[in-house]
Each structure stands twice: as C-alpha cells, then as structure tokens.
Length: 508
Image (cartoon, rainbow, N blue to C red; front, top):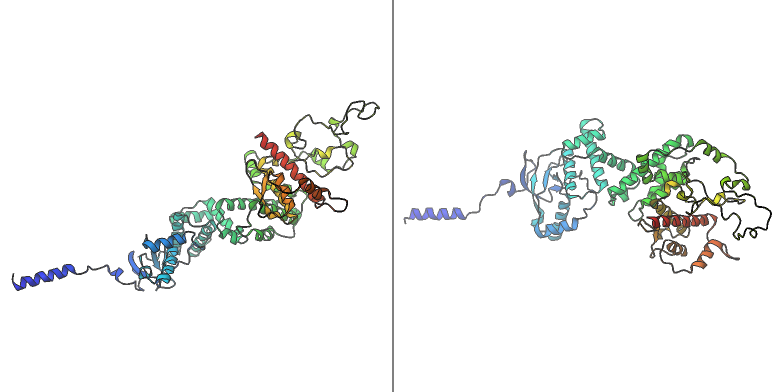
C-alpha cells in the first residue's frame, strides 16, 4: 500500500470517529432574538419564568409525585414556551408547565445538577395572551387539576382579555362562542354558574372556595342564594329593610369561610335566621324561609306548579279574634250533653274528660297524614278544651312531612338545644336512611344535654336519664330547670319530629 493510500485510510477513519454535529438550536441557549416558527431549544432555569396568567393559584396536589418522577426519570414531556412580551430576554410557559418549573427549581437548588438546570423545550412564537390563558386552562382540564374557583377565575380573566382586545363588553353567550372557536368549548350554563360564583360567593367565602370546594356544593349554595334573593326582592319594597341582601351575606359568610366550619345545613340555618331579622314581614317567618329555600320544594314546584293560595274564608278565620274556650272544640267532635250523673261512674268511663276527642283515624294526632289537613297549620293540641292553648309544636306542615325534611329539622333542633350549653359543635348531621337526622360526636361532646340528644337519636348515653330529664325540664324545690320555656318547647318539638320520622321509617 502506498503512503498516499495509507494516509487516505487514516483520514477516513478519523472522520468516522468524529462526534456528529448537533442541531444548532440545541448547542447553546436561546438568544434574545426569538425565532419566528416552532423549534426545539435548550433553556436554563434563569431564562424561564412562570406564566402570570396561569389560572392555578394553589399548590398542585400532585406536586410531590411530579417532583419525585422528575428526580428519577427527568421530564416525560417537553414543555412548550414562548417569548415573554414584557421581558424579551425571558420565556414563559404557553400551555402548562408551571408545576414542572417549580419542581425543577427545587431540584436544582437541592442538587445543583445541570440535569435539572438546562431544560429541553419547544418554542412557539408569541400567540397572544388569550391563547396562553386557554392553553393553560386546556392543559389543566386534561389533567383534572384545577379547582372550580380556579377555573372560574381563569375564564373570567380570559373574558377580560377578550374585552380589552375587542374594546367592547362580551356577554356570556359571546364568551362561550369565543372560547369554542379557540378550541376550549364551555357551555353557557357552566359559564353562568362560574360567573355567579366569582361575583357573588368569592368575595364572601374566598378561603373556602380556594380550599377546593366542589362543583355540587357550589351549585347548591348558588341555588340557595338565588332563591333567597328572589324572595327578598319580592318583599323588600313593602318591608323597607334597613340593610341590603348583600349585607346579610357579608354578616353570615365569615363564620363558614373554611373547610372545617363549612356545612350547607348550618349555613342555611344561620342565613335564614339573619334574613328573618333583617326583613321583618308578616308573611315571612323561619318556616316560610325554610320551605322556600328547600331544594325538594323547588323540584316539587317545577313538577306540579305553585301551591294553591289559601282560601279567603280560611284567611278570615285566621284574622278573627280567639273565641272562648268552650267554642274551641270543633262541632263535629262535640258529644251530646249526658243526663245528670256522677261523671265517670254512670258511663263506666274512668278516663280524663276530653281525653277522647276523636278524628276517626288511628294515626298519631297532629300529623299531616292523620288529620287530612292539607294546610298543615292546624294543631290538635290547640283544639282541646283548655283555657290557654299551648304552643303549637305538634303539627307538621305538609310540605315538610317527609323523612328528608324531618331529618333536617331534627338536626336543627338538636343543634339549638346543644348550643344552649355551648356544645353545638358536637351535633353532626346524619342523613342515613334510618338515622334520626343527627348524631353526637363523643370526642367533641362535653355536656349532659348532648348525652340526652344522643339517646333520643338512638345513640349511647352514660348519664342517668331520669335524673337528667328532671334536671333539664322540671328542676327541683331549690333549683330552676336548666331548660327555660323556649328550650322546653324546642325539646318537645324535637320529640314530636323524631316520633314522626321513626313512624315514616317504619312504614318504608
């Protein structure tokens, strides 16, 4: 082999052993002059910035898992970036990536490994703010990582950007069309709920919503607020309240602005109490508000329409003065006057007078089913021949005579009784099919009243119940009863409610 041939073979061998050329864009970090088309880049963490329009404001619940995965395997997907219009020397994520950037930053601070400092990215020319916002929304929607309020605020920001760019207001229907055209379809009804949540709930309950309150609970709260506002507006012109509806919301909501304190039933109870105080009107009391704000009643009205108004003659009867005691016994149940005999002997009847006022029905007196009273407003106790009719705790309105309503009423009454001894937090709602509407948390319970309530609902009680009942309801010759008259009436109403609830459960 000649010397020249040997030299050519050596040159060819050296050429084959040389390292191949790499793409120019991946040899160095990107320059401030951004390219005009999509291309791969290697960017450092110093050049990257989180997107300020990213709808996520809370820590990703999967952050620790994502960080552990990046530590072990690196990035599974290449993040998409674009030029930062406010800082041409920096790049922001255009379609998600803020969580991965945070994980890489922490790993770089912990290890100082170039593996986490230099990031392979796919550059996209600046698409505009609206495209970036929708890109982040779509990315998080795909992963299911956004809370309801984060998504609602993100869409509100998208609406604001569209309005700024177009120079005119954008309706929700126009927004739905614009988002669909951008590749992010959202129904008008969903946009309406999100808008109502941001405008009406977020100012009053920010911490609760940011904690991740779910769509079903938010929808129920929105319906409750909407129904209450409609009834408020209907009577406000006549009642002329001194405060606004929003003032009532502002007063009630701070007590429930955390996941630990949130309960829709408790919120409804306190909300109605404030509404009754703020909007005094003869047609509005607690029970009326409770019925109007009950989802079951709203569904019934959608199916069967509004309830029939009370007949004029019944309204006149309600407005007439209270008759004498002897005339309060209904004519259909009065007995003929017997001949003069010794009471209870000639007839062989040893029962108390007036104890056998009959309705021809063996069901419990006062129940809406037993009396056949569709108005649910007549009390059997009040129809007895007494000089002074006791409070009407026996009757149950027809619209509330079902297990769901009775469980809710029982919980409210039990909470009121326990709260009188500063033990209300021990009463927990229980909507089980065979429950009494509530249960007592033994770890939170510190009152004998809660022990009695637990016994009524079918739970355990370590107290001596006869002595406890005497202490609460009757007292002694030297000690007042712990329950005043109002609490005693509440206790009796709870017993009546639980009796009717158990009756319905036995029939089911």
